[in-house]
Length: 97
Image (cartoon, rainbow, N blue to C red; front, side, top):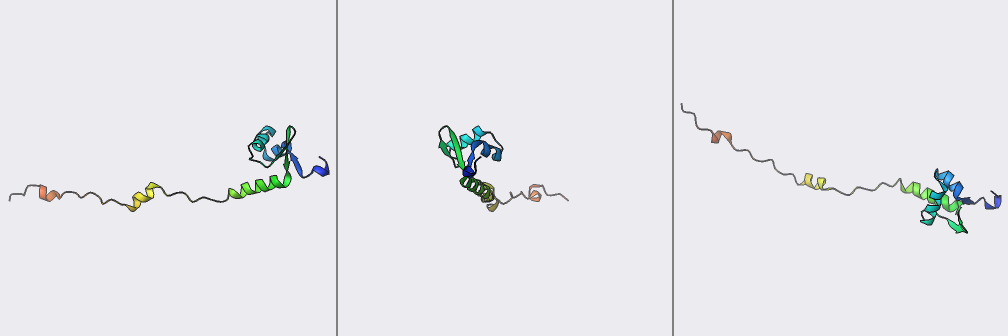
């Protein structure tokens, strides 16, 4: 590639960097999942925009979302009392003696 165009990446170069097929890269460009410009039949990727996009994606993976509370937590707070067992002595006949 010419030094004049060193800041422009082709879909083949981007595919090699992302370890995928050029058709996958071009589909991502069409879907606006990668920063790209269509010229004629091909796509070009400004290197700085591409690297910024990849960096932003990598950093967003570091942000962990707090999971939403589940019903299990609510059930723990509303503990039910264990059932009351009958007094077995009161149910037994009194021993004659």
